[in-house]
Length: 69
Image 1: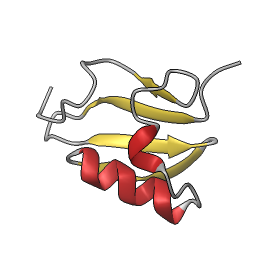
Image 2 (image 1 turned 180 degrees about the vertical axis):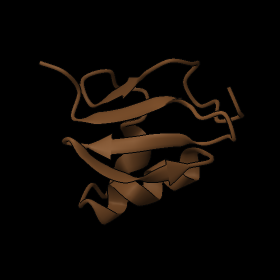
Image 3 (image 1 turned 90 degrees about the horizontal axis):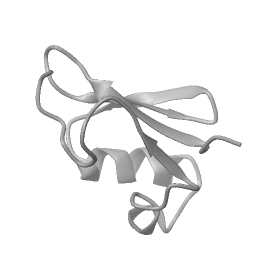
């Protein structure tokens, strides 16, 4: 089973698309953006989830890096 939160590869202009259970949450430019998207989705302890592979999958780049590809 894949993680419910996907942080996609960095875009050519910077930022990473974030999907939560297959729905686009937005474009994150840092961890704070991701945490806000997760809080809006009803995950109050979002900051604790970012490094848990069962919850978050980082694709196409290093975790916590958002600069342009």
